[in-house]
Image (tube, rainbow, N blue to C red; front, side, top):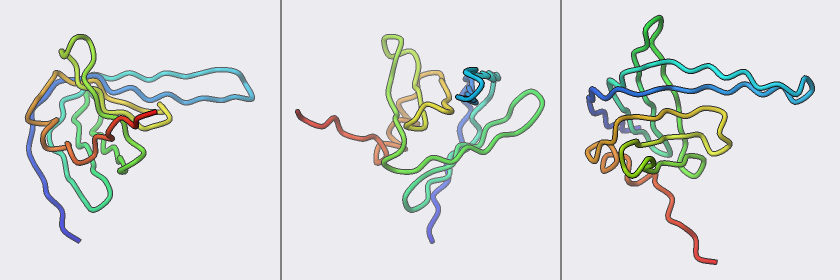
Length: 109
């Protein structure tokens, strides 16, 4: 299995949403992070982030990940398809190009 890793130094906010439907509550955990490395693997990639109190490794899979710019191109969002966790990073064309193969093309209707 071949892994391709690239170092980054991009600030952002990681958000983890825990939904408890039976309690009808959402717990939202937001943490400032610095994206330090991205490791691509067949079928997905891992974001390595340094937080204030802990380091995070979030896994994403091709076809289950949304990657797009928001806030008029100022923010790059990488989110799990169902929205249970996502990270908003300072816009980085270099990061976007590195992850381009995971960006799903809009389907025509």
